[in-house]
Structures are given as C-alpha cells and as structure tokens.
Length: 292
Image (cartoon, rainbow, N blue to C red; front, side):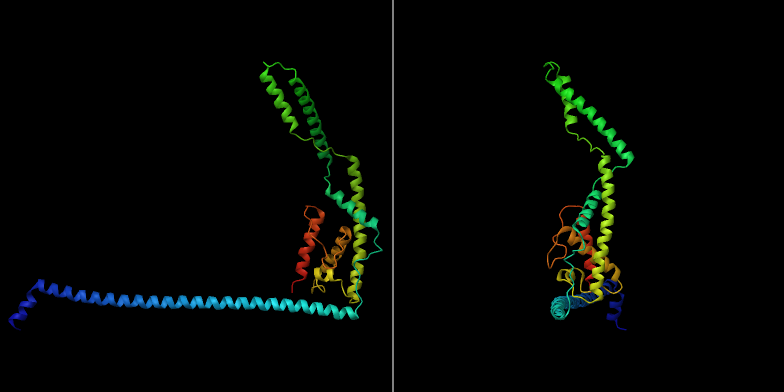
C-alpha cells in the first residue's frame, strides 16, 4: 500500500465527505425512480379513469337501449291486446256489465244510506252521557256570559277591572262551540239503515258476481273499461280474489254513476270518506292484477 492510499484511508473527514456524496447520488437516483413511478401511476390512474368513464357511457347507452326495448315491448303488447279484442269481438259474444235491470234502484239507495249511517258519529251510552253533561255545562257558561255582556252596558267608567272581567268572560264563551247532542232517534234510524244496507250490498254483490262468473265460464268478451282495470283474465292462483275485486269495481260504477267506456272508476274522489277509501283500494288491487 502506498503512502497516498494510506493517507486517504486514515482521513475521517474525507471518508465522510465521500460517503455523503455517494448518499446524495443514491438519493438523487431514488428521487428519479420515485418521480418515474409517480408519473407511471398518474398515467395508469388517468387510463383507469378514462376506462371507467367509457364503461359508464356504454352502460348508459345500454340502459337507454333496454328502456327503448321495454317501451317497444309494451307498445307491442298493447297492439296485441287491441288486435285480440278486435278478433274476439267479431266472433265472441260481449259481456254486459253496464246494464243491471235485476238490481233495483232502492237496493242501491239502501247501500248508500247504510254507508252514510256508518260515516256518521255514533255515541256509546257513556259518550252520550258525557256529551249531555258537556252541553249542560256549555249552556250554563253561555248564560253567564250573556249576563256578563249585558252588565257591560251598565257598568260605570270607574269600574274598569270589573268591565275587563266581564268582557273576558263573554269573549271566552263566544269562542267555544256547543257539542253536538246525541240523537237517540237518529241512532236508532242509523242502526236500521246499517242493517238494511248490509243486506242490500250482500244481495247486490251476489248478483254482480254471478254475472261475472258466467261471463268467465262462457269466455265472453269483457267491456274495455273492465279489461283496462282488471286485465284480460284472472292471474294464476288469484281467481277468487280477482272475482271479489271485479265485483266491487262493478258495484262502484253502479253506486256512483260511472259510465265511462274506458275508465272503470272515473276520477279519484278528492274528499275523504267511504268512496275515496274504496277507490284507492280498488286501484291498488287492480294494479297488482295487471302486472305481468
């Protein structure tokens, strides 16, 4: 070993500087590799993003195409139904669900009266007792309020506290409402109306169902409004439920004078009550029957 080599090896500062230089070179190389890796990752991410966007566009086009095909199938189904009706109409007897001479007007009147009776508030014996007590209390307070109001015109100007008290008493009574009195007579009449209505609706539903069953048994062509509402036939496994709903659809038309040749139930009622409840139920049930 020469003198110069020995000098280099024994100089700790020089050895440290050389090591630092080597580390700097390695760090620089590492930074370059890291930058290249980041660049490659960015390119890969951009490529993946573009691929995702491209797949999303393809999926959207596919969904649009599926929607178009579904609409086309739906239109085709309606055309087939219309064609089927025309073919059947030329060679099949039509069912008549609009004319019901065997159902007397008084039957329908009894049903309506029964429905109105059910819609009216009924009182239990205890409710009637409590209501009469509340009416007596109201009448008592009303008389006191009237006396207080009459006294207002006679009070001197110096009696302001008393004037205010009387005025407050009259005002409180004026803002209250007298409870509706229980009418034993009406209650008895409603009981009779409910019973008669129940019998009438039972008889009417039996008459309607019999005709619908005969139409099904003889493969008659249903009216357009009937098929639009209930479909061309009972769904498999739901024949009895379908007949029950079909009977109520016809009954609804009779009770509420619906005569549309296409719309089975007519416009939906806006007011709450028995008619709206029935309309909503029939609409919901028939929607299920028309599902493929």
